[in-house]
Length: 256
Image 1 (cartoon, rainbow, N blue to C red):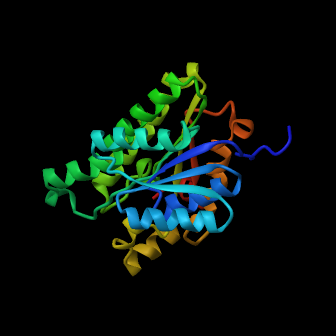
Image 2: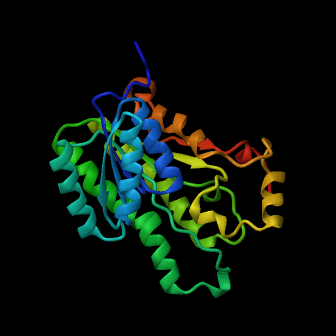
């Protein structure tokens, strides 16, 4: 079967590609030969990631988009299609978090987090999967969820609710898109040093998390690359869809 993880000739669109986790996954896909569209709200950050990929011998271009705006997503699809002709892999990695206690939660904050984490993912997938189907282009959609989607964690109520929604959407769309050869899966990361969770990691919180993580450490961003490459490759995971793949150091096996 040759190299099961070879992505040569594939184009991957990385939403949230300028984030810690999104950029690391993008680099992992690029190392396997994928052409990478780095998408972020901050064009300077997205451009920086694209340049790093190219400096390492890969092919990448940067794009600006706000996933909470359908118009922005539609414009992005036009721009990426003009650049690459289409895409085979879509990674939904944008994330917004908050530590606001439940009784202090305001509607605006709820809407803002849901707009990025769940609504943005849904409508990004709607736009990009429709183009794939129109082009009869099989491929892979990978959503980034969270351990808090399956295990209730204090201080991240809205984030957890949004990521639980991501899991449900992933499994629903896996069934919806299966007849078109488009696989939809999610990665459930454990605790990684990502931007959106640093501010809630007090010393006590770190100790609590590590006490419930059998591997007794946080994950490194590069440790998500293997899972993403596996799910992106039709050769390696061609019969895998609707899965929620945990990369959490054993956190999901513990009872809190």
